Image 1 (cartoon, rainbow, N blue to C red):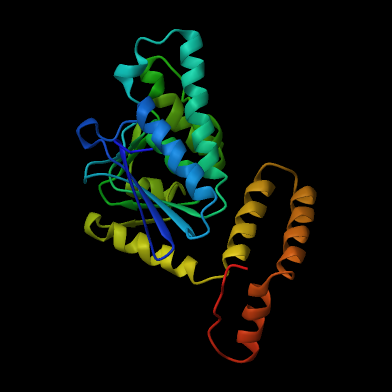
Image 2: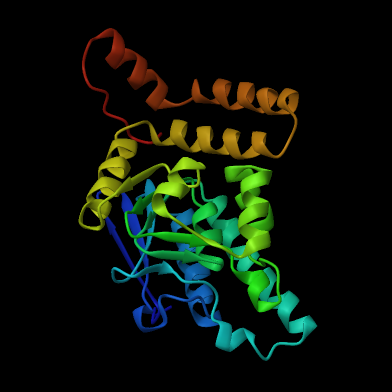
Length: 260
């Protein structure tokens, strides 16, 4: 697929997806979500990609939400179908084997906030703004916001953001746990790439199994979650990376992981 609304590149094990509709503040229309789905499905089976970074084009907006003009004429059946399209793609992002880092470079509103919550880690620039403004448009969040935002920041903060349709700045997002770190706009991508490169130096299979265990555990009881952890922990001992990692520790040298 030739991408018209996103830019995708891979370098040193890091795949970077840039939502590229700056004139529309990177709002998500059907064409953009379709391209996002295509690239995510390619990344999922690409062993050359160890970490994924998602950001927005320009310095104003990460993703300013779903495209309201495109949504405004939908009937109930079409609205439900559109919500499920977005939900399915964001779930694919959440379930990517690789860790996903959101580099939030401006507005992350509605679908943009929901996209960031589908990522594993969120870094924001100082000018970033977050919100779920849907109730002011007569709708609910539709791309997973009522579920993922609640899991990220807790019920109270999620309900306040969703019920009021209000907007918070990057420092408040940091305070409530919506983002991991806030840096100046000019330093955002450097900070994100530093984090991504740190992750790529670790054992890829172990990183991916850790992600799977965390995501599985969030959606079940603790007893079931730790049972799954025991399974992936044991599975690690069948990998060459486990042998290499422990041998390197004993021999006081840096490990050379191969992802096997």
